[in-house]
Length: 284
Image 1 (tube, rainbow, N blue to C red):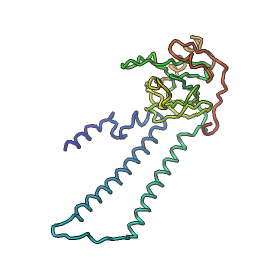
Image 2: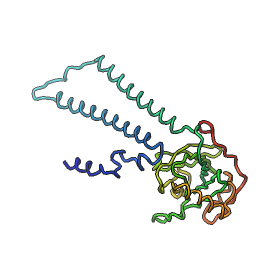
Image 3: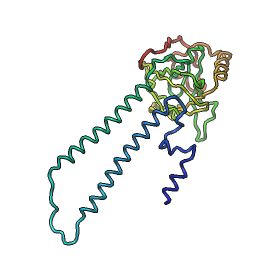
Image 4: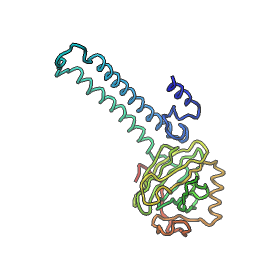
């Protein structure tokens, strides 16, 4: 009775139980519902197989247990062709279904053929993030977040601004080593690789501040590579672009800056403006 009460108590509107504890919500972006569906569907299939296997094991333990008066070994059955065919076909069918939906959703999620409304160039570095906004020709320098065991002040963490309801194309690069750009609420991450430009598109659908982090072990202060994604109204997004221009952050930071300029107190400045044209197909 107690396990049932625990489960039912977690079925409220804000409960992660219907999503099987995935972060965020199903409508955070235009992609999160697809990812949630395949996650939940995979777990349901796995649990169904588990229940069947556990049931068969328990049945065998009870039905074929050693009884008083039994001597010797039970009859040994070497072959059972129908069972062997079933054990082969059913797993193949399950794997085929999972592969089909995984390939379909992955192709849709990674598709960058649509024309984006906004481009955001995020450059990973040890140990922070620089953000270029090519459309507005402005940039923001991220400094390493020095954690002391308490929640880091929002002002010290790089903030990436996105307009709600607009298609955003992220352009991911790295200066030094491999980093990984992850926004848990978006249910998506992609690597920042030196010398490689990776892209993905997303339409944020709910205003709010979403925590992001690096998920590729990239050195001593990997845990301090934090950032926020702020999904705001178009007017607030435009105001932030104007604010960056007013501060003199005009131009684009190139991906070859010295890492010594990107630590707290460093003085990163714009380098040669990179050509960041929207991709017409998949990731480069």
